[in-house]
Image 1 (cartoon, rainbow, N blue to C red):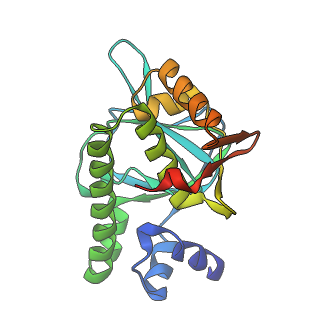
Image 2 (tube, one colour; image 1 turned 120 degrees about the vertical axis):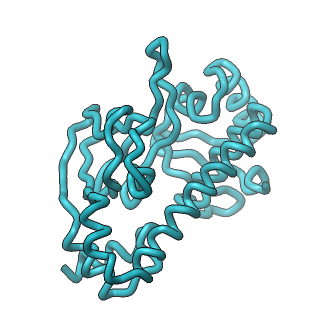
Length: 223
């Protein structure tokens, strides 16, 4: 239990909670495992739970009317998804798929509300974090509307650097296993234009690609 509580402390969703409140949350989650490529959530399903990634990595995507998959983002250990399900009975608008063998902890809304109804401060703290997350998503989408391809790529890596970056001299290392196609889908550009822009950034010394990550020059991270 103690180890689980320590782990929850590092998760943004529960960052405002006390140890006592975290102990309560620990008892509510249900662990479930998914194989690489297995769909965790389908669009159109009832949204009645929040999912916390305990281990692994997932892809969040939309399926267009003509069957094309549009990648929205990738989430890793410690991230959560399905937050819309906390606010009401809205149907899922996106698909979530395991990119590798993944474990998630599922918190059903009714379980959370029933247990937290006597702890309104805890409930408000969770709602505050969920609201902040939705606000950040809206800001990110708005910023993309006014950026060219290179700017969108830079924005993509800025977000990654904030959460995962490690400083090495004038460069920041970002664990990276994304394909050009996946980056293109996330930032809403063609694969060809993203490939050209990245090649230009590599040529100018802004990006350096390696098998398990990239080095990005600090100057390109200035917003």
